[in-house]
Length: 330
Length: 284
Image 1 (cartoon, rainbow over the protein chains, first blue to last red):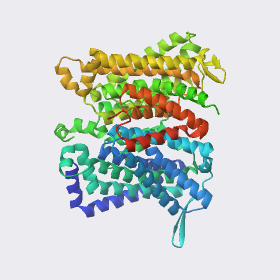
Image 2 (cartoon, rainbow over the protein chains, first blue to last red; image 1 turned 180 degrees about the vertical axis):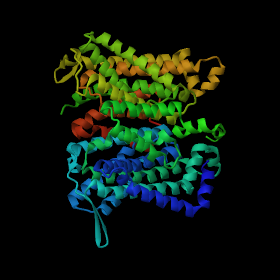
Image 3 (spheres, rainbow over the protein chains, first blue to last red; image 1 turned 120 degrees about the horizontal axis):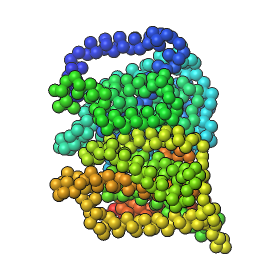
């Protein structure tokens, strides 16, 4: 299926770029279209940030077919890096973003290398354990915030030569969140067509073929995992500026369950799937909230039930209704 | 610092780890299934025991029985829902689905039992045994004895009875096992119900030692992971040795290095082992 999409996309680069620009422009004015209130801005900014967070786990789950339960670690690395470097050393947004990417690559490279020779569920188990340990360290180590976290993170500052962008309010942060989201989408689209992306899919769908082509599934896993970490990390980086606070709650299972649900809800291997999934889930929690504990039950149930009853997500469900012939390709 | 006391503490801790990890070892080793709701099941087992004792006024042994029955039923429900994924051995989806179930259990438990920390009432956990400079509680003795007994019983059942080989045959190839007249679905159901019931028993025995919280499942489960991997993924004797060994390591690390970072130390141990022996200590 991806091969067909690939040819289709490559044949019309101009059209694709045009659509992208229209979407980006519409996105920029979307909060205005929704009334321009600060609630509209903050909700959309949150959706954009959380969607980027989900895209990190998406490339591991959708294209590699493995389950990382440790992406909250990268999410927290982003938040803690932004908070610590900007509050203690007064560094600007570029420096904290760069440090986030570097630290995420180091952490993911370490975890991936350690689990390189183990079976797939050991990888999930170790990533899960890494997040628990990350929580313990963040909670106990006072130098990086301790149990109270870090409050009063100053506004995001991104100097461009002479001018400096300053994101003090939710309205100011929206263009940054949108840009980050669009860059992530471009990155994922490129990844899907890259050598690594196709190798990952092949390892997942047809391991025998991958092996015969000399592809080492373990190295592919390591590469994809390392690539995925900075995406979720940068989302955490922006989240710290949006909330002006980071604390051990960034390790909450909520974020992990949200990431996985957003990816499987619409359907794996769909470019804008995680974005729509995130939007639906955040809309439920913000607009139709049933209270914290009920929201947990809803989110967990959606995750479990989708995989049990509609493994191909909502898209698969519509396809089944609409066109039986497409079923064979799933 | 008293070395002998730390050895006692280590064995006490370790038998608790081994007791809670037994069910995961069986699930993984015998049926090759995973359950990432394990931590939340442990939490629920502890809370059902607490509820049965404080609200329903049951004595401790009956409360344990109530927890075992409640979680056994829950296990049957979960397994029935996941049956198709289990029969197709879809481990990736199973991991995520059980994680989702765990999150539902956490939210549901917070609704039913409230968000406050609770302590299981009990005289055993407060009854000290003093041996000069050494001390432990009768609850510790109970956990230690029950753990050894459980491991012995499970080992005999899986290695020395026909049922054990039936379960292993299903784990090897469920479709083939069905051709030989084995009802694979029933076997999986049995193993999963046993897993949940065993977690309930472990929780009812171990939880009286410390306060319980509905959000504790996420963190509690890490020691089980370490025990299972250290023990050689599915080896029953390996898990017992690994549990006791991990308990000793944690006791000494907590006493001499840092109490706050014991989980991190256990994780470091796990990572070192994965690099040196990816298949676990027990593997040849």
